[in-house]
Length: 174
Ligand code: GDP
Image (cartoon, rainbow, N blue to C red; front, top):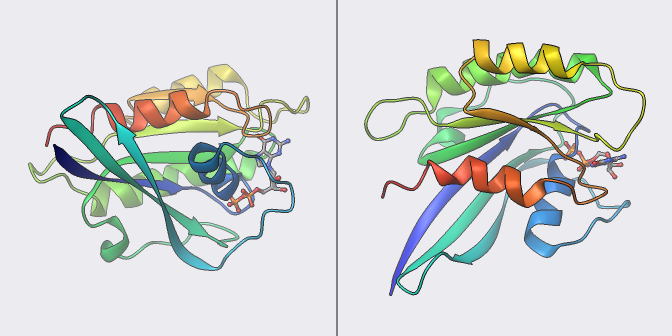
């Protein structure tokens, strides 16, 4: 059978939950003392989509960034999908999503020249003190060309798999 390689990026400010998200998706665990690494890291998950199609999913997480920095083209190269994540209790992490999306639109291209499909993820929705309303997120998501947006809680394991499916679903026109 065939193995496909699917590279998906997870971007967003530091502390929004990117490492926890990848860790939860790959290993099914939430670890509060999960150690932050510095630099770019990737994890792998093997998916059996059908008898004939198997996918080696590479999740690239820019770990250890405190705020938005522009990434190099090398990081974006070959990516077929992206999750742009913010913390729903942090309005500054939400503001940064505009920069992350612009950087992606400028540098991350599919082989056909189109920008890669991105989904917007509002993480930590288990917390009560929200800083951004659903209405605001919805308007922003539509205005900036995200395929969709979703609320997640890595802590409560809510929508983690769903968000990853949405981010990789449209990416598989091999
Ligand atoms: P990163 O810097 O974006 O990779 O963020 P981390 O994965 O290191 O997470 C930052 C902090 O937020 C850690 O203390 C996590 O335990 C916590 N965290 C991550 N996801 C959630 C969530 O869904 N809910 C809550 N309450 N905390 C979370």
